[in-house]
Image (cartoon, rainbow, N blue to C red; front, side, top):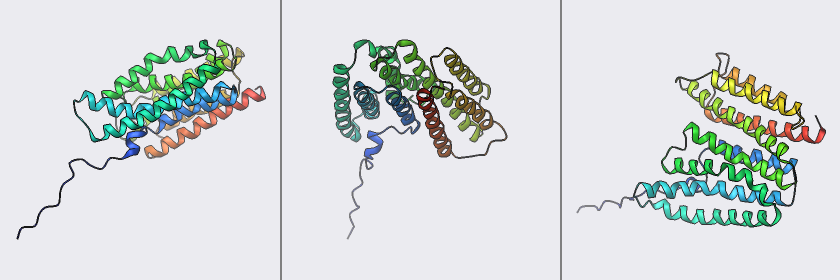
Length: 272
């Protein structure tokens, strides 16, 4: 008597987390640093609504990525149905934030979002074509997210010079860090890497923050933090570094980002 073979699942088990949430852990820093900094420095009735809007848009990216990648491939993937449900839920969050922000914010406060809209569209294009890990996609995507701090400041009644200066500081913190992490990981894997690009980016970022402080558009306290980031980059890409795993590098960047935001917040309220 022949035994019947057990049925073989045509598709592997779907992990809801992989469909709903971004796999890049660093992207959470891109989201939270400008939101936390903006709400702490420029609180207003509109700030929580803007945060909900941005969080909804951020969460919408991953299920949209699943939906578009399957559609462009001409395949009906089992996770597409689940992705559609998550997309509907996250789009609802986005709409709630958008409505609340619209009722509590002047229209001109949203100009930074309008400026970075092409960046967001390009990142969606890269997601759909499985190119989200490209350097340009990461740089433009992070810049799009950091615009939230400028919108929050404008909604609180800040002028454009200081609002855009906050945006510049957060962007100057994230872009050099992206360059550093990418090259640090290549170094740890024994691949070719650039030393001069991350170091130059960090030096330029420190110089920018110093100029903004001298022009009374930003506090001085973040400047030492940017110098620490510069030193971290120089040591991390040198022979004096300690070899560590990618997870520890990521955790380190979260810590550096938190300290930078704290320096910006404290510097703003203390006046240094």
